[in-house]
Every structure is written in structure tokens, then in C-alpha cells.
Length: 167
Image 1 (spheres, rainbow, N blue to C red):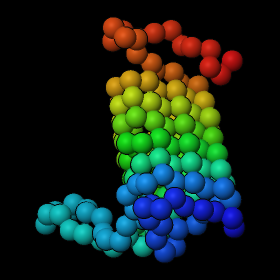
Image 2: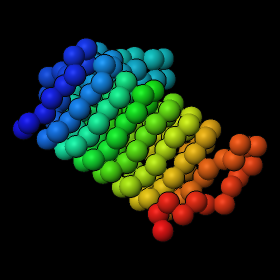
Image 3: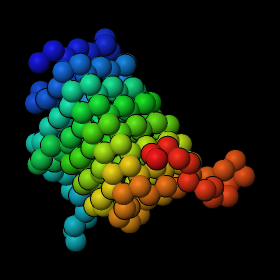
Image 4: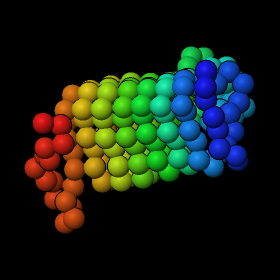
């Protein structure tokens, strides 16, 4: 595979990259270590044995991807990830997504294709997001989001009518 990495980016063992993957200087894509889980006796750590899989034509800014605990964290072909994006372990990010500006995606999220997120969007764990969904400033996604969901905010904080981005 013809992949490349910009200096000061880190790619660890078991990371799988498609063709034409690019990074800007960023924290590690798959740090060694463990995940914290809670149980009746308190919190404990389990090793992260999974990996990160990056599809072809993925571009990653100064974002952070977590390795999977036991499976793969997958970033789909053509996805563009800007700075300040945190993708937790075991997530599956679909193809041709655009993520920018303070996005936090919790574990085991499965999201669709051609999806846009920008401006402080938080996504709860264990949910699915449909194709062509759009989430704007300060949106919290806590339940399953159907395809073509659209949640922008205007400059005044009021909800706007959907923009015709995906006509």
C-alpha cells in the first residue's frame, strides 16, 4: 500500500492504512496502553488489543484516534478529519465523512456515509448515525440518528431550516 505520514505523526503496530492516507503533526494514532472499565468493585484496566484501520484517501489533522479494545477502530475511505477530533475505540466511521472543530465520538458508534459534523458536536456511545446526517454547532447526539438528519444552529442559537447541502 502506498501510504505516507508527515513527520511528528505516530503510527503504531497493527495500524492498517489504505492508499493515499495523510497526516498532519498529531498525537499517536494508536497509543499503547489500556482502557478503563467500571465494575461493581470499582474501575479497572483492560489491554487494548485491537487496531486502527484507515481507508484510502483518508486525511487526518491533529486529531486523536483510539485503538480498539478487541476489534478495529475503522475510518472509512475518503473521510476527512480536521483538528481537535477525538474518536474513541471500536468506532466505525463511514466513507466520505467530514469531521471538524471539537468533535467527540464515544465508543462503538457506527456512522453512515457522506456525513458532516462541525463545531462542538458530541456523540454518545453505542448508537448508529444514518447516511447524509449533518450536525452543527454545540449538538449532542444521544440517540440513533436517521439518515439525512440535520441539526444546525444559527448565530442566535435558534434552530435553522435545513440547508440544501444534500439535495
